[in-house]
Length: 151
Image (cartoon, rainbow, N blue to C red; front, side, top):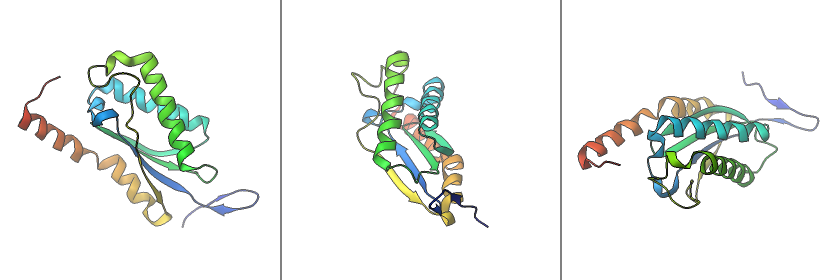
């Protein structure tokens, strides 16, 4: 049975699946520290917005978030806050970690993916985000071997 959030004037559920990609779709999240710091800053921003993160996971060149309790927010405002805050913090404090991939004031690409997620599919999205990212790492390793590029 689903438990819905209740407030003084409404009862319901609102969840989003978001995906962000770094500038130029560079594989900056191959670096564990870059990945961990970016996740930490995204988590700080979600706390400031009073959002619950149901799942968060990275591929080499993208990040997925499953946000819950989003009913008081608009997608664009949340995306601007998350991307703006994490980009500012990463560029200000950790630029050397990814400067060989990105330049200038770019951290995230301009676009993003979002999807509203209902009760029936919330668990499947969580599972996809937490377990489904292995395929991106495998694909990336195959491409690295195939093209044999180095940083």
